[in-house]
Length: 317
Image: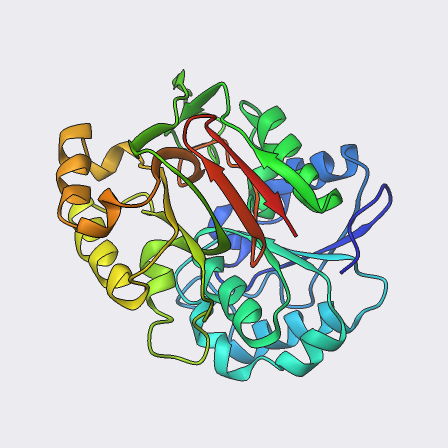
């Protein structure tokens, strides 16, 4: 799969929510400007603006846009507009043979977890969990976010490192103040491990259980995070369900929780203490992926090597 270089062409597609959910095209022009500042050309899919009662396009429109993006030889990467709640609707209708014959980068987070893992499961094509198009209009924290995204887009080997500071504020609303705190990736259980990266948003990844779109790999490292607006009790049951479907992870990496989850360190440790497997493998938490900002970008389907003493994850595609 070709990596991005200066001048590469990025197609923005809305596999989940429409751009109208975020105020429309003009309200998000800062994202286009940032991507151009980074050296890339952008274009937008045919149904990019379509918005129905669910603030999304029809299944047929979204599938058509994804297929057209992969078929267009001038397009080097596909970038999701934003997350949402319904991209798993697309999975039975995607032409995975078409995608495999025209491999290219596809990136998003949150609800994008469904098609990122499904494409990897059905084609073996590695995909990217990282910022969506709208994420690039965020100003504070963007240096780290863009740097982590660029290394994944342009290199086949890279390190995931902590940001300097993080925020759990509505970054998409520039009228609201931001409050930053020092970043610290924390260790629940120490160790070293290697395995294939799978996962993402925990509830969305859970939608793949029992379907042909769930990755089936022998040695895997689970990445798991809770969406903002969700209470920590959702994490309790979703984590249990994932560990039943994927009972032998080599390691667990947990994304930082948004403030409205109402989770505390004591509660999180009590949740993790429920599962004996987590006392036998490396477990990191409060990491720079999830629904706080900024985000790193990690390759679904790549090999990850994790060392909790060094607090670094090495990714090899």
